[in-house]
Structure formats: C-alpha cells, structure tokens
Amino acid sequence: MIPIRAAMPGAARSFAALVSLLRSCSSGVSAASAVPRPWAHPRLAGLLWGGEDLSAAIGASANRDENGQYTAPFAMARGLCLLAARAAGVAPIDAVFTDFRDNDKLKRETDAARRDGFSAKAAIHPLQVDIINRCFTPTDDERRWSERVIAAFEASDSGAVQIDGIMLDAPHLAQEASRAAGSSLSSRHQVSASPATRTSDGWK
Image (cartoon, rainbow, N blue to C red; front, top):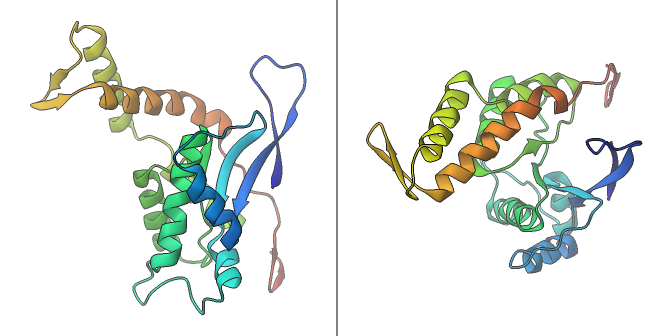
C-alpha cells in the first residue's frame, strides 16, 4: 500500500488515503479474483500496477516486446488492474514508463492509458509529470462534445438521442458526464512535479 494525502470536500482535516500497488503474482491473482465483485474500502483511492515489480516477481527477462508493447503476462496484469479498480470504484493507475527522456513514447502510452479507461499514470521522473497531466486533461473539443451530449439528453424524454448522425444511449451519457466532471476537477487535482528526484546519476 502507498499512503497519499487527500482531502475530502468540506472536511475539516485531511486523511491518509491508500493506493494499492499490484506488484507480485499474489496481488495479481487477488486482483483477478476481485474483478467480478466490488471490494471498495473507504480509504482505498486507487490501484496501481507495477510492470517493473512484476517482471522481478515472475522472473521475466523483459516486459516489452521488440515494438515496445507489453508482452502477454503484463498486458493481462494491466487489464486486470483496470477492471479491478473500476469494480472497486477507485482510480485505475497505469504503470510507469521508464524511459523518461522519450517524451513521444510517453505521450503515446499515456494517451493509450486514457483511451483504455485509466484515470492516471504513474511518473518515474518529474520531467514526465506535465506530459501526463496534459494527456489526461480533456481537450476543448472533448468538453464541447460532452456538453452537447448532456444537453441533448436533458432535452429528450427518451433513453437515446441522435447527434450528427450518431446514436447515443445511457452508457454514452454516463461516459460524457464523467468526462465533464473530471474536466471541472482537473485543474485542482493535477500532480505537481517535485523539484528533485533521485536517479541512477544522482539528484537531478
């Protein structure tokens, strides 16, 4: 468990929330068994899977293939973390991208994490924080689309609406409402980079 500080809206003081790190075979199996049923805890804020930790736990020589994609065991662990977190009603957090000097690959991997349903991505170096924050911040076009979808449902008496030739129903409304809510909170909840971090070369 990784303790973090969090403040509840309107609370008089902060409390210690927990992010659970799925880093071993046993925690991965636990996540798999947890997927079919919710298992939320009041202090559980998120689930983070550790690709590097899992490599060591299962004795893998690498966790990515020649194209930079996660191999099967790690792709499975990533998916299980996402599903277990959503079942628990907490934030699914994608693993770190270790090559902190490759901003293009970090952006592509973070965009993919957001596309797949992750709420955040862990950073291994402060240089990655701004890129990750930008990737998880809805664009102006996305915000406008969410507003149109919500407005269309509010103006309709049916469970489905049509916008620009696209049929939308309840799952689409839930998705856009969630995006709109996340957009309104993003500026207040983005992670800030610490001024220094320890690397193999020392403090940078």
